[in-house]
Image (cartoon, rainbow over all chains, first blue to last red; front, side, top):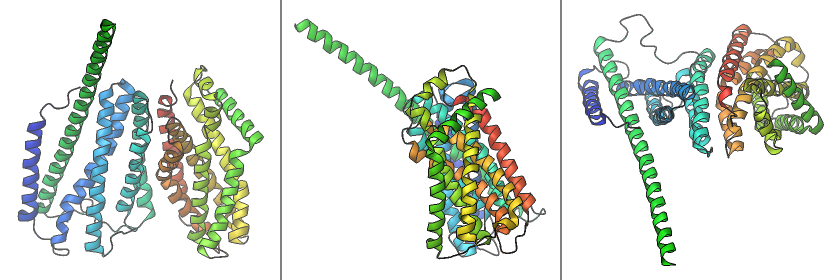
Length: 241
Length: 224
């Protein structure tokens, strides 16, 4: 399995996109009248959350592919997508807390369905690794992890629906309200930021996939070398007697 | 498929009736939890959303107890291999296990709901009983479907006592939300039923979604 093709080019594009997004966020997008400078965390927090959720759902889709084809590469992809989304999830909860503290005055707001749903989904995916690594057989591990990924992927939209129904809205619904709510320059900045953060996600996934497959190859080669050494030692022992 | 599931279901019930392991544990746990809530909250009677929360968190944790034990007989006494060697559909295993879990939950609630009423509500549960029964039964379907799936997911892991509760609790959050929201007005002093339809619909939707997901993925569990 080779995952490393084009990694360098992708990394360069990602770095450029991130630089562009940061430039737009700090020098182009206007200061928001109500919240001021703090509002700029919106350009990080919301794309991070969207990409993390998409990563989890993608993990479920890769899980379906693994069960359908039995090809190990889908297992790698599913694992890495979920793992990266977990890391993004930590960033989402941190940036969300900071933003909540700055604009609503509390680190945590239970009345905010999106934040609460995200926490529940995050907690569910936190159990992915403990579950996965307590299964010894690698083939079975992949299959069970895929079943988890599919179930959890279906759970994500359901959970958002349940939590949203249960709580009144606090979050700004910037894109669903009547047009003109978010000025064009802010929307452009946000879209560039979304693309940059999605690219960063893909790059990090590719990097982890490359490193995992390299590690697997190394392990296989080392095992073969050990087997050869053992055979040689045995021959030497037999020869000496 | 239905016949096989029915046979497996009957086997589980027979084992449970003869040993009474899970049911006794669940009932005792529920009653104990009500006693603990009495002291923890320092209240003699509770009502409304507090009562709904106590009831549903207790039932959720009792479900966790049953789910960790769901495949125990198969695993410890070697029934697993026989089950896997038998030329039967894996889906039948899921349906049988979910049906047994559902039955256990109903059996526990037959004791736990009156106990809850006597210990913490002082006899007001009957006011909203028909609606509450609908909520309980719909929630049980969801608990049973997700419970059977998670039990099978955890069956092959080395640390299932840890993995099963960790997996199960976040997955069941929507059930607790919907069931608690639906039963809060039913358990308040003059029993009312505000937004009951919405929450029943939510529970039905959850049940349907997870029964379908479980039926779809269960074939890949418990292989070889």
